[in-house]
Image 1 (cartoon, rainbow, N blue to C red):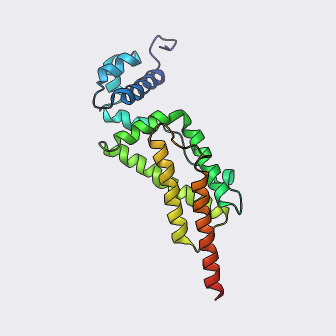
Image 2: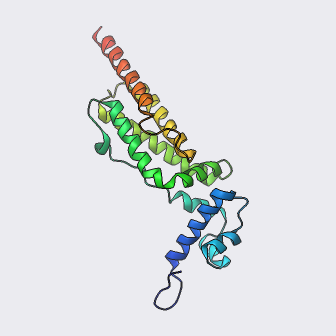
Image 3: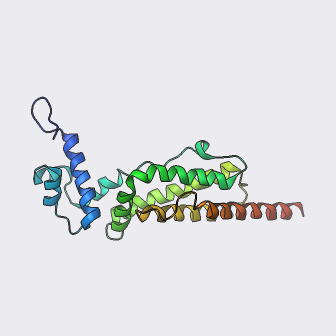
Length: 202
């Protein structure tokens, strides 16, 4: 374990080792079945140090949520003007790239969300932010702002699909395999635009 020049254990290193051990053990054995003494053992720290950083065991889950990658993506990085399907595909690909190193952690947290309110709330906030991000990409790609209901429905559908895939650790579909679903959503929006245009012209 790294030590400072005065011989004391590095606080940052100890806390990081505790979180790494907790993530590994919670994923393998579950939260309830993992005692803090085992976390301390795997982390190579005294048990008291676990409670020094994390007063209650659920505080470890809260800290693990904060280790999930930042999912905020500037729409300008993925949007192709006039092509909603390609824009959504690029967004999903970038989200998958960011989550690729945290698939097990993502699965663990979604699994524990059912029994730990603080985890559920944190993941719900991320989900709501994802819906807003998908909406921004759809609109930036050229979907008419007057189609509020359709854009909202499409945003929720895409966010649900992404969240589901990130909650099961093994991504059962690659961004390429999701292309058909994204194209279907985009075509539905396009059809809605044509209907709205016809109504407006009548």
